[in-house]
Image 1 (cartoon, rainbow, N blue to C red):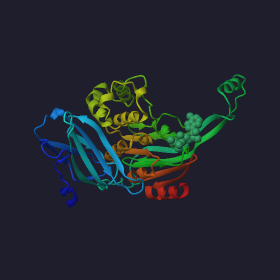
Image 2: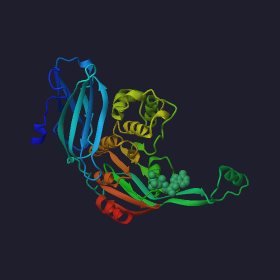
Image 3: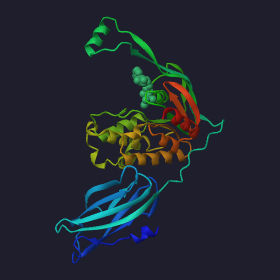
Length: 375
Ligand SMILES: Nc1ncnc2c1ncn2[C@@H]1O[C@H](COP(=O)(O)OP(=O)(O)O)[C@@H](O)[C@H]1O
Ligand SMILES: [Mg+2]
């Protein structure tokens, strides 16, 4: 605490005397929980025109293993506030450089902020046996027909197809899977690559029909399954928000009313009229996540989508998922390549390996076993 308050530094003039103005930096808080935004505000005093100034904010954090972490805001004209989402816990240094465009004089001010573990979040408690189920997966198997030979070219493949020489073999991507997800749970799916996790989620979302067994879902689903599913790459981001919203069952008036929130959450205010094909996959992930979570669906399905967005956006998504987990009645199904995320959020986990169910149970038990055998 003492370090923080002693660092309420005033101007640190690059050109010491006589420039006639100075800057101080104020923070929305000295201590915040992990993944909570911090607002840094530059206060400029003295004889200077606001419009003559440009602002650049930067942060850094010394981490032991991978060296220091740094980041910056880019240069803003006339922007005295910056919102920063800390990527992890620790003591962050935040600094503003204010440059006078005509004289070239630069003033800096900095502060420290402590980012601590978010302790307010609790994984949902294990459900009672008689809690209502929202997802019932009963003895589900999924069989894909795949070509049994390898072809060296598409031409070879079509020749074989034309000659009726193409042989298929059955591939069992899921083999007798059984689990139930209760209302209000945060349920995780883990398993090494190619184990059938995405296939399972697609069956739950109704994108695929199970070859055997049944899957019953009660309530509305917001699926974040495959990047770009439900998007048309030739349309602009704005048009895609309406298209994707319609696919999720939202009315036009509803999207009108929430449009600004969606755009702001995605932080893509300036890119709304750009066709989606010019977006990076991270930008598409941002939009998809914003649309899917703008309201509270009964069931939110998240399939590793988060890994595509950048670091800070992932944190923001995690915070939003936690909000949904904590609000009554929302059920979250999470597949993540980050076992940490599953461990932080989920109360129960199902482990699927090469299409077969290995374990289902409380998060710590399943994740520990998974880490021992897979890691
Ligand atoms: N449409 C499909 N046709 C044939 N095989 C598929 C199809 N979709 C998935 N698979 C296969 O099913 C297995 C499981 O895939 P997937 O569910 O994507 O695994 P995970 O998400 O756990 O990485 C993989 O071997 C994959 O190649
Ligand atoms: Mg997958």
